[in-house]
Image 1 (cartoon, rainbow, N blue to C red):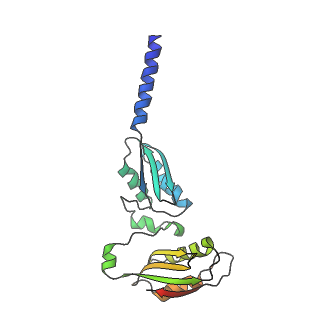
Image 2: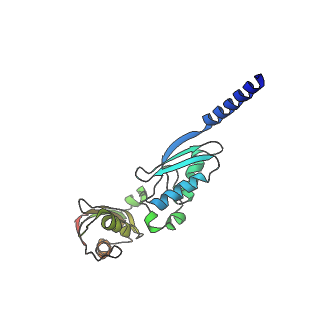
Image 3: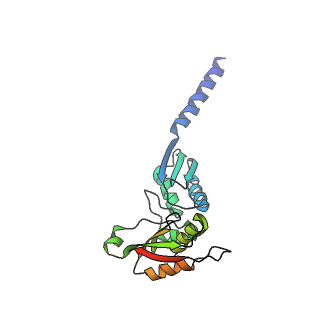
Length: 198
């Protein structure tokens, strides 16, 4: 009887100590869509010791539960190597550039680019949009596909498109053409873009 009790006690202590070793942390990971979620979570789960990984597209937070030998740094590195910037490690440009167009999230703009005067911000008033997803998000993505665009945000409610761009690679007139030339699949909508602030 004593042996059985001792074995049960040892088993409980072992399970408790393992449970105590599991850490749960959250950190920011940039991404956009369901494909991003699968890629981010998949990269994190490949790290030895990671028990669970859950990325929230709204908050951009990746929640991970892990034990040794995994560490926060090794998980961030694995996610960055898959093409997604974290708040600790930036993804290699070559990997980011190969991501699908809808997965190419807006990247942080370096102070060096701003100080050189290359990076500018322009606001367009866009008319003709009929929905937030097909129109506003579609225009946002169409703009962001161009290498000169650093950030693009299109607000359906206000009809304002904010674009942060490298003026050495793209002009305001070219961006206007991108907006007005955008066409959702299977639809023939007409958009008009007018600069309201530059």
